[in-house]
Length: 516
Image 1 (cartoon, rainbow, N blue to C red):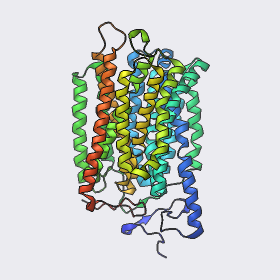
Image 2 (image 1 turned 30 degrees about the vertical axis):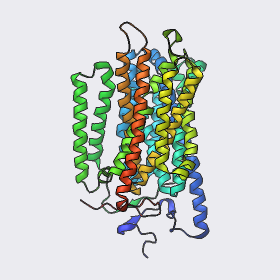
Image 3 (image 1 turned 90 degrees about the vertical axis):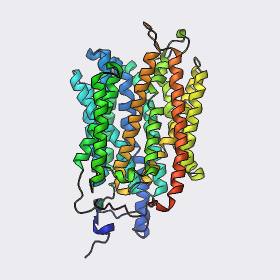
Image 4 (image 1 turned 135 degrees about the vertical axis):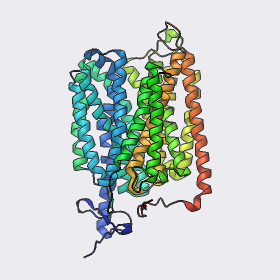
């Protein structure tokens, strides 16, 4: 008897745990209705759980506890930078590898592996007796950044287009809200335990509990299987080496100086490796990333948008915190610390979450491109308004909330636009690349801000002059303006190639790649 669910192009479609393909037109009758309801409930509820259990506590709490953790382990201030740097550098390895393996073997399988590794890393950070053990734990925790691409791919794969848009928007909003909640939780836990390592047991235990979610509640994705499908390990190695070199240079630059031979060598070497990676991927029949699709202007322009939103949202996070913590005696600042500082910064996450809730109906009303452009414009206005707010806590908190709202409109919509323009069977690596590009944008902007602050600090002074912060707000406003203009360019590109666009309907079969 033949395969009742043949895959396009002659391959076989894998149906995990005996499930039928639930996309419209495949299942029939009551079974279709029941399974659709199950998937919608799982997709919109259970996928959010790992974010509240992991990201809010791991990614939000650790930065808050880092200074005290350094004192407990006897680390220098310069060494503390590596606690964050190792986390980001390791994510460059985890994200492309797990995202692509998810596309090939099943996203839930990789989600299970990622959560287990995250739990091990979180426990190791909590019990670390020395700096080396701490860095190993943080390297394992870098797998955290692969959770979002895997979950986005699951939602994209298992739900209809309309449901997937709403589910992904809520996922992204929950991520940032959780990160902001971690700021508050970190301060409260440190006050209660009086020990950073004791406080770190809370996210470790929460992560262990969340292991249950992908093993029990999350359905497997429906993947396309074709003869000869395999992992592009060479592509993964080149991408990791190239991006890792650039990000390591960004971590070392503020300390060693941007003219340092090692820093320059890492930047140049990373760019060269990435150029080689691109050329290799263009020649491969089964690349890590579908660069032929990525090179299309209508897709490439959206990834540039991801770079810009990363710069405007991740980049100024430290500037927000140091501005609020600066004593008003310096002529600006709010003099906040501890829990009050965490509450102040949580406005950013609240804004993002609210935007993730309203973004889907706004998309239905005005369209995806208009919502992303509006997000960039709102962010530009908020950053420019900050120029007039130097010592007003309520006003600054409100503007940070508006910045969060603007970011939320973009991040709740932009990745969906990317996923809908690329092959459905490469949703994992497409989302993973989006996440990496956004993180890279934040890292680059963070390095630029470090240079600005160094120039704006007088010799012998312990704080940055207000001119430094004004420069940062103006830079972020300019980036937001460029992002809005980019959406105008995107509209013109789409209009000019409208007759050549591949379908983005989730009911359509996945794009089949032909050997070059």
